[in-house]
Amino acid sequence: MKKAIILVNTSNTNHNAGPKAQTDISMFLSKHGFKSVMLSVNNNSAIFKLLVVLFNLPRLGATLSSMDEVIIQYPMSAFLMRNLIKVLRKKTNAKIYCVIHDIESLRLKKDNSEFRNREISLLNKVDGLIVHNSNMLNWLKKSGLRIPAVQLDLFDYGNSQHLNEKINYERSICFAGNLSKSTFLNKFHPKNFELYLYGTGLSSKVHDKNIHYQGSFDPDDLPKYLTQSFGLMWDGNSVSSCSGIYGQYTKYNAPHKVSLYLSCGMPVIVWKKAGVADYIVKNHLGLAVESLTELDDKLDSISFEDYKQMKFNCLREAQKLRSGYFITNAITRIEDK
Image (cartoon, rainbow, N blue to C red; front, side, top):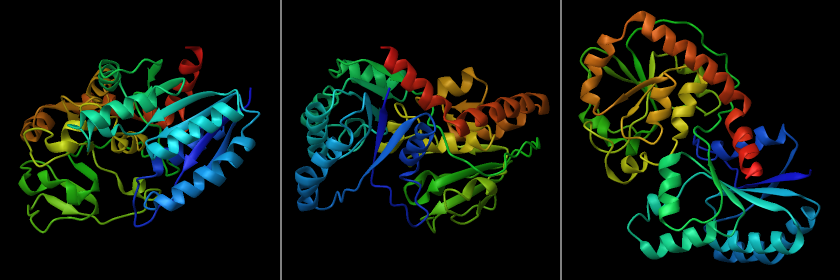
């Protein structure tokens, strides 16, 4: 069986990990016989997108004419995706599957019912979806999704850095990401543990003797600096819950940041209502908390033996994430459907 995966827009600058999830999926699937096909698009130019549709897509269709299966990674421009699907239907007999990275109807377009209907209609044009978790799947079905779908659970993470197998429970926590939108840090005051920050856009309002800024690093280099006891996944402007557009979105998505931490063999701390929380708790990969104010007591209550078991579990999970286990497993399941 001939298979291909389409990769759109792979530029990665300014220590931005944005495209890494898509490039990692392409890399892992290429190791399992998928042909990786590049489609260059400038999303800021309507004229460029039109030229892509008129000239690049027909050539792409000809290139993929013998394929039995094609993977699209979403989101992409709705205009581009509609025409891409048309070309694939016309030029190939391939099954078309879509890996969901983000659903804008759950994020920036959350209250726009017209946009939601268009987005669901677009997704219904492919043969199957790979979604993040049961929360996202249930929402999509309630919103009108009719095609088969399977859960990914976690995004795999290409990590070539040495896996830190040292078990040293220091009650330290790291937080990596876009610090400018992590405004909860302005109100965060750890008492009995140290918090280490990695990323860009740190606010001058973040002042606490137990919070330490470590700088910004390329996504491929960052893992070697993450040596703390836990990795924190939190979003929004509140320490009592994940709030705001991005905070509420964590109820449905599988944050790439969680995969970063786990690929380092590091237990994670997530919001109890996050979509990934059930998986983390069930597999004993870290903690799920209602509020960040719980952390001092939670960390004090963990014994060394309990932490050691978490660490062993995370080291096993790291090997799965580094090998592309989750995407290859999901592809097999959607093919079976």
